[in-house]
Image 1 (cartoon, rainbow over the protein chains, first blue to last red):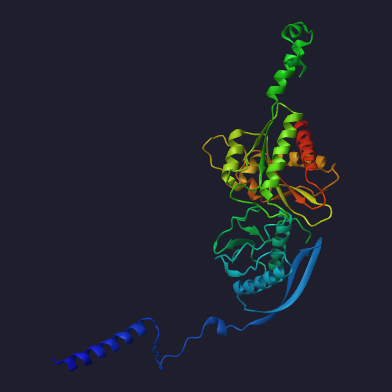
Image 2: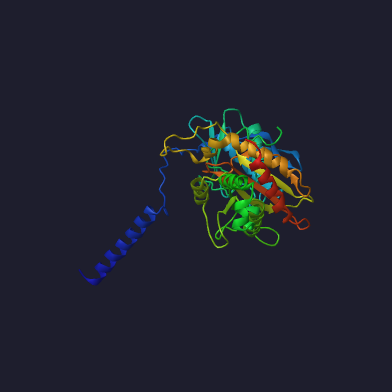
Length: 184
Length: 223
């Protein structure tokens, strides 16, 4: 083989290697035009507009704020939207000191326990224990009034792990009826 | 006590020496053990207050409270779960309480209060169902149910503490609240948390005497 042939073979091999690498890392994707695209469940599920009441305990009484949300029919996605709206409002009202987002909401198989995973503890740990409990009670009341009956307990998590709260024991699921420290 | 101030010969001739001996025996056996648990430690500063952290105020209050209790009742034993440079986990604090078989475990906590009249709250562990005392020393009890062993005693003691704390005028005292208190988990003796607000206008030092008197009256009331 002369040098020219070797050069051509090497170039072709390099080109094939680059194409194979791009295919493996999905830089280049080949789609079969004969196969129909699969729509995701979210795209096909119609969103409904729903009026939701957000409850907050401030200045010794309940305050209600009604907002309109586009919610999916699935309970998990509903809870996600409602709680995210509550967290945004609670941060503005300074019930929580750091911005907090709901990372995930999952129901157990029996649809009785709702697991909520937050980015941070959804209360201000520098406030008194009573104020923190009132904040959590507000969240529980919002969920209770906005979602259909069936859910009995809420398990609070942070980054999908049990919360080690310095003042309140949140290692066990909390009843959706609340801590019974505030009037209904 | 008068008993110790007299010389031996004088004491021997006292007609009421047997009464004094009896009183001494009663007082030493009646010794009550109280554990004070200040919030925070060397690693955990606790809540941030206006000018300092929670751990310094609570330790100062506990030390003042210990001094007050021992001045009032020399037969009492008062233990503080930590010193200034020590670090204690919740499990270690509970172990101290359970192994010493104390009569009362009191967690002291404070927060920054924006109200004109600061608040004072008493919390105790939410009772679920009374649990009988384990007959087998190796029996495992869930940490969140440890207080159920003494739930009846706690409720009575907390009510008494609340009634006595109402008599002070500087703080707005709320009714005792049963909550799932993380600071009282795993404790098998009567336990409660006292949480008070710190303001820039009202000093917290008078609370030492108020809490001390409330403890003394609660511990000495008939069962």
